Image (cartoon, helix red, strand yellow):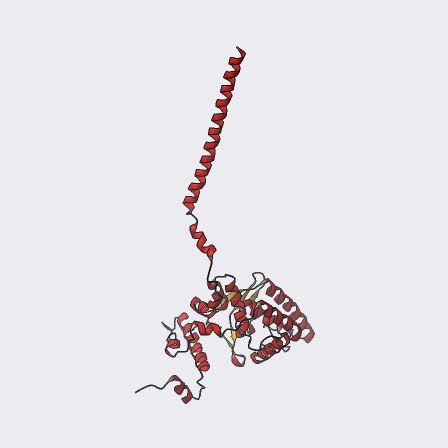
Length: 308
């Protein structure tokens, strides 16, 4: 008996079957099974190959064309506009741009996750739909580096939050790094709405989204020659292949300095060349000294003959 296409089966369950919705369902299943494999509850991930079978995975070139990343000037204009247009959201937008976190991961950050001394953030959870706290998309936590600018901004935010606690009469400071005036986590819809408002104030194209800040973080790092493995770890990608497929067009394709290093002789050869050079220099000095001694002896003989 032939099986119905996956779209027909989803419609039969009352689920919209657009390619994007199917991709989201597949990504959720894949993350769940990845977590089960890591916890040794399953030997493998049955959803791992479904992407290609159902043609849900976009080819790398198409995926790269869909990426919308700001350049440095656009990002600077956006962050400046956020300071005046939405100051409560500005530290969140800076965090997204300087760490590459997904929006849900940033919204679920707690003060206990921040180590300003080491300049690190621990990504241990994610804010899902309807305020539900879940594991990160990768299925496990990770530690990301924090830039000096971001560390200073979060340090200042902590001071402001302490003052806000006294001003509002909170018994305890809210655990969330980014929170509303009621001490609750930001609503994802409100963040997106505020993001669009800041875009308009900065005079930037409306096609950017909060997720664009993740791309804005990764693309210049790869463009300036940082290791794809480092970018993968920061982003929390499941594999380095995903990082390269997503951001491949930003990877430098030529590096003549790298191939020039292959021309350098091995360390042993360099040591022998240096030793030979020193020996030649020493031998030259000895020959020069011998010649000088011969000249002095001849002069002494001539002087003696002239005196007789």
